[in-house]
Image (cartoon, rainbow, N blue to C red; front, side, top):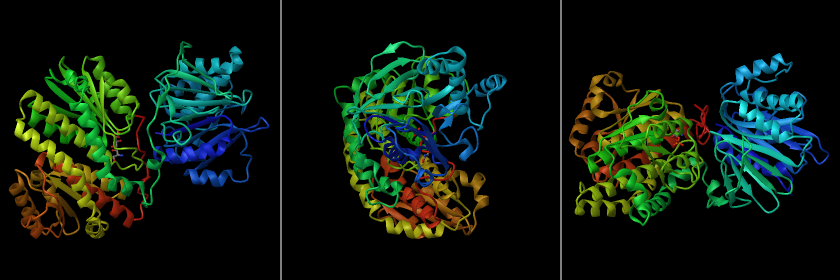
Length: 610
Ligand code: AGP
């Protein structure tokens, strides 16, 4: 997925665009570029392979004047990362410039048509096809800039968030979205564009979240014309965004990921306060009117959010006795699932923009399912497509590796299970009260785990030399093993695999050797003794064990080569604590290996393309 920015107003555009691209760099960092219409009326485009800082080096000492511009930071889909495919892309005449986030599915046939009309292309991207199509329509049909963008967008199929400049109209930016997010910032005599609110919030807290097939014309005099790509006029709905700029800074930490790991006491406190209000407060009926008659829950998500969904399966089934399926969104959307009346789909997503998850809930709604989303970004596409939403309120998560969002997602889903079970009578008063009280102790308990980060850093030294690693857990901590393995592989590039501990003897135990560490989530649980046996099986084959244990544990702590102890808590709440040492472990291993922790290779923070 890519990041788009735009500016038109009273300031010089370039500084606003560059700062905005830095804010959006977590969305993709293969290449970056800007297009400016200078005070003299020329269209200047500067782009570079690599990061936004490389673009700044490229643009140094060039004409950076102008109060109107667009910018882009790329995660490659069509066309390899590099200068040739970096955005902005120009039309053949050089008059038009475009930036785009999404995938144009019929770009090949459009490109062939345009080549047949004498158009030549400079890149391999689907994006260049759009800007060439706009110019082709302008010239062939004599349409205005706005009308030709409109016509072109009616012809393309697929997902887009685009911003377009025409050097002959230096007082106008035309932008539109379908399937990829785009936000308009409304300042004093100035207007902004962003793929999300983060490049906008330091200038204004007034935003317009564009809907699918919305098109907006931004003018120098700060006039906004909102319509659909079919030309139907719409009234802009200006909303206030509550994001604080300081949340977008590292705040003295070396990396966003470490900051966000260490922020978890606060983010979880904020999450618990908000979700308690949602589930027990006056508007709880919005959620439970959807759930109360559910015969089955289908949780759909990707990556870390899918792991949170897997934890939720254990909690919801145990506390409500409602059957739960957990499906990767990319599989769910294509496997023609049986969706019955009375099914409720829960979509879990940090960004609220993951294309597979968005498509999965669209399909589920078409088949009559109710959709509840659990999301961290207010106003993002998935909540806007759902029947209702529970926001995790963890604050902006910039590091590509999801951490505080995961603990917030698990907390939300566990509290949902608990309150739902209590309402159904499948959770008794005493258990309900005890667990609700224990939930409130988790932020401080996470703080005690973070205080042991030096212990974890020492454990990381062993792991950093491993060619691969196994993570094992049981029950609701099996998904924690999966999540710990994902953290390690996505930021340190060490292959790691999560497994249910009892499955070791069905194959993976063949891998056990001195060279491959086994990270074991072995805190207090109903199956603790079984896990001890699993660890003994590993030790008996010279396997090396690193363990997460409950404070006071003497058995696994004695067997393990190294361990970190977490505070005691009810088993159903333990995933929220047990993942924290594994987050820190992956972070320190990645640092030891000199990896780019916040922007790991090939990844992006939110995958808004299939
Ligand atoms: C997790 O660390 C990864 N960044 C990735 O797996 C992520 O969880 C996945 O892409 C889903 O994103 P979402 O929660 O924003 O939908």
